[in-house]
Length: 129
Image 1: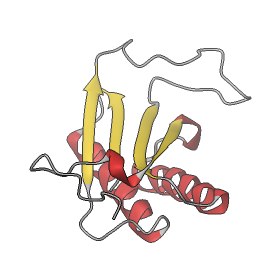
Image 2: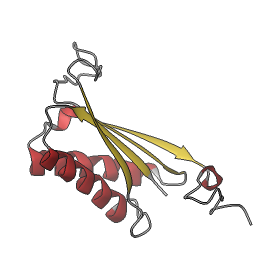
Image 3: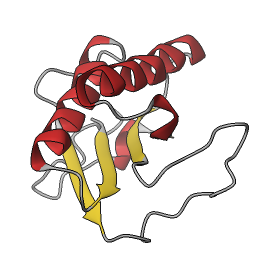
Image 4: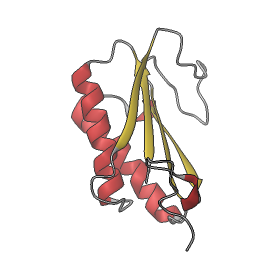
């Protein structure tokens, strides 16, 4: 049930974009326990200047043009500890497998109710019973 959006600079190679997608899906499956084969993702590239972030940093974190924005919409209910482990796994794996700085991995989770999804056919597959 998650939908992941990954936004990167246009200079990011197709190989790195694929790795980012695989890393996010792996963390969703292993840490957040999303259903098998539930891999819905949008990976978008943006022209220089289209990814906006505070040049002076924020909360003691300094960013570079290599910033990666990851937003995941999923069903509510995961604990704070699960979310912390999820963030850590993504940042660690992205750094290890792509060389992207951990500081440049920005993650936002959007918790929604199950009835906020339609996976096709105009149906609410997770409708309340």
